[in-house]
Length: 57
Image (cartoon, rainbow, N blue to C red):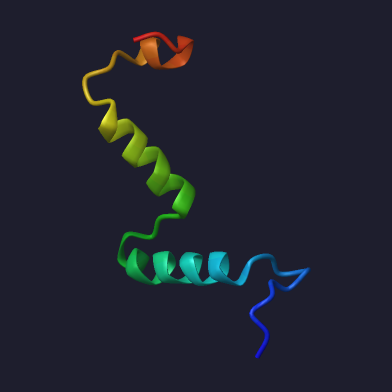
């Protein structure tokens, strides 16, 4: 079996990572992008919403 990425389907390891994520988070029904957004929000707890839009802290 070749370990090269398939030119149409992208990187094999990325596909496996996405499949693992979706399997582990299935009960929460969220996408990787939604998870990343929630992590970013949590890391900036207490930040004023206006600050997050203009990029200042």
